[in-house]
Amino acid sequence: MRLRTRERAEPDVNLTPLIDVVFLLLIFFMISTTFEREAQLKVDLPEASTEAAEAPPERLEVTIKGSGDIFINDQQVVNTKPETIKRAIEELLGDKRDLPMIIRADSDSALQYAVTLMDIARQLEIKQVSLATVQTDAGQ
Image 1: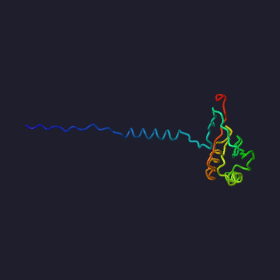
Image 2: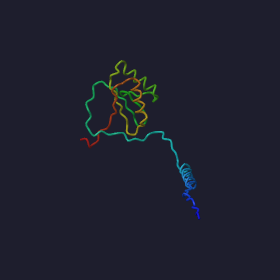
Image 3: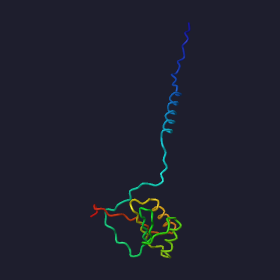
C-alpha cells in the first residue's frame, strides 16, 4: 500500500498591510511638515585670532554695511545692483587688474552681497580677493 505524502506549503508573508502603514506614515509626515524658503543665509561671519598682515599701499577696499550700503574705497555706491557695482569697480580699477580687492562686511550684513562681490571680481578677473575679519581679544 502506497501512502500519499502531502506537499509542504511554504509559509507566506503578506506584505500588503506593511506597505499600507508605510504609505500612511509617508503621507502623514508630508502633510505635517512645513517647508520654508530661505531668503537669506544666516551666517556669523568669521573673526580672526591672528594679527593682520600689512597690506600693500594700493588696494581696492569694498565695505558692506549692515544696512546694505556698499562703499568702494570709502565712496558710497548709488545702488546695490550688480551692474552698478561692477561699473564702479571697473572705473576705479582702470587697467590695474592685479590690484588686490578686500571685502569688509559687517557681521550683520547679508552674505549675498559678499557673494555678489566675489562673482564680480571673478568676472573682472581680479586675482587677489580677500575677506577682512575682525580681530578678537583672544589674538592679543
